Length: 114
Length: 109
Image (cartoon, rainbow over all chains, first blue to last red; front, side, top):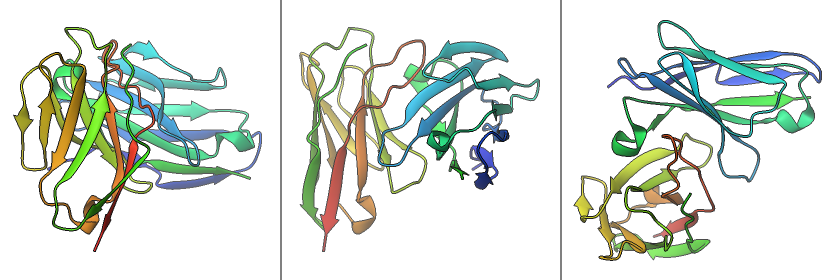
């Protein structure tokens, strides 16, 4: 079965650089969620999109932005990277109301800022 | 959002049942109980969810108390590959899952 695809799997950037993470949801899934997981931390919700519109916002820094495109894939753009942005970034997708159907997570992108 | 309380860690012998408890005393009537697990550095994996009734699937069983203030995830025959952090989540708001502190389950030979 098709899963949530994230790219790249690994990314190394220097401080103050920018990074773009991509997420391709399961076909027919209309909702995308982004989570950040720092070393030894639990996943923290960043932002979500439903039908290409932002649906919820969590602890996403102002330096980050995201969008969902017409094909439902999503991109997380991160600017002025800081060392503290080093983390695993997970994308999840769902169809319809997630509290009924649940999420499917991707394998994540490991971002290292040096 | 309803909060959950889980033990920080549990041990289980391979082949035995693993029973992971979760307290969610402030759960509201329309909130579901979700269980996810995360094997080291992999994306969280959906296990099971329920509203009021007990649920079972190929991975696990979910037992929810009648007052819905607590639940138990049961892995009937734990294997080494079940070693993971298990998250009980009931804080669903506008379809957002909020992860708290889960239970690190260590399955030993």
